Structures are given as structure tokens and as C-alpha cells.
Image (cartoon, rainbow, N blue to C red; front, side):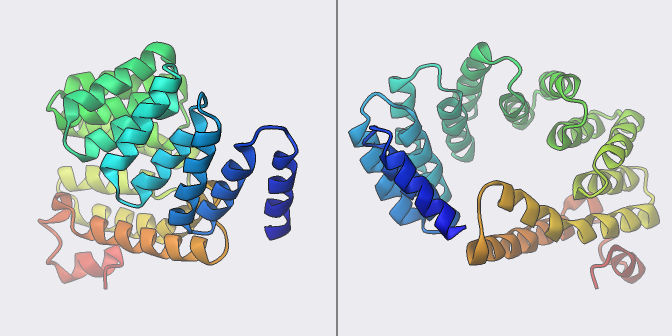
Length: 274
């Protein structure tokens, strides 16, 4: 893998684009968990390619991962100024704004992104999330439903649609959505977690606990696979997968949806919490 990365740097350096080697080195550094060094490479790439949005998009992503939200937002804004049609920059800016609680601004960025790419699943799901946080559940459902119709086997689309249906009181439709999710993605934890949420709503502690156990069994493998798809390798991958797994399981065990059962020893044993 290291040889391939170095070869990629060399090849890109021969393209005549002075920014390309810096982009390539930045990508390699990100994949190895060295985000500060990667940010410096992306900045240099942005300087050498003053019209290109990509270096600034990568810089924004890296700064966001480093927790430097204001700097990330500035990078995304610069990317949009260079390339107004950049969907990545719009989505990146919306992600930062959402994290800052600036919901209307985030929705505005996503609406602009969807104007140019109306079938972008990530933008649809993100705007649905914003609408839900604003209390506009019906509006959120429309975006989630559109996403499911566009790609009926997409895990995040089905999961978010199911949770929104559950929040809207459409329990049976939500449970059918989670069953469908388990069928199309049996190795993903989301379908089983959705089943647990549905069981909790109808007061079935045993079914909720069984579904939580199945979800928990799938978290680590799913986290590792998703992070590997993002390009992480080696020790960086293992560290990120372990942290993501720990955080996901902690969040699952602290959800208010299961608060009525969480102190019951039998529930905790069945759910795999002990």
C-alpha cells in the first residue's frame, strides 16, 4: 500500500499540474491519520491551483475532522467561490453549520446543492435531518422518502426514513422499513437498531433487547468496513474503528428510547450490555 501511494504521488507529479503532488501527499497523510500535515499539503495545493475547488474541499474536510469548524467553513466557502456548482463544498459547509446549530443556513446550503443535483442522496438526507431538528417532521419525511425512492437499498436512507416514520407515529410502516433494511443489508447494525426502536415504542422489552444484541454484534465490523472505504489503513484504521465502535455502543446504551428497560437486569443481559 505504501509503495502504491508513493507511485501515485510520482505519477501525479508528472501530469504538469503543480498542485497534484500536494493533493496526493495530503490524501496519503489523511489515510494514515496525519491530518495536520495533510492540511498543510492541501493549503499548498490550493495556492498552486488558484481556480480549483478540490484542494479547498479536501482542506475543509480535514479541518472539520480536526475540530476546527470555523476554518473548515472558510475553506468550503472559498471552494464555493471558486466553483459555485461544487456539491462537495455546499455539503461540507452545511455539515459545519449544522454542527454550530445554524439550521437555516445549513438548509440553505443543502437546497442550493439539490438545485444542481436533485438526486444527491447525501444532500437529501442531510436536509431531512435539518428539517427534523427544526421540528418540521413532515418536510423531513418528504426528503427521506425521495431518497428511498431514488435508491431503495441505501442503508442510511432506509434507516433515517424508518426513524422519521416512527417519530411521526407511523409505527407499522416504520417497522416494515426496518425489516426491509435487515433484508437488503443483513450485516449492518442499523436495521436491527431500528427494530429495537420499534419494539420499544410498542413496549416489547424482550424484542427490543434481542434486536439490540444483534445490532451490537454488527457495530465493530460495520465501522471498520466504512472507515476502510474512506481510505484509512493500518494503525490509523484500527484506532478509528475502535473509537467509532466504542462511541456507537455507548450512544446505543444511553438512548432515551430504551430508558424504561435499561435498569432491568434481564433486559441488559439479553441486549448484551453485561
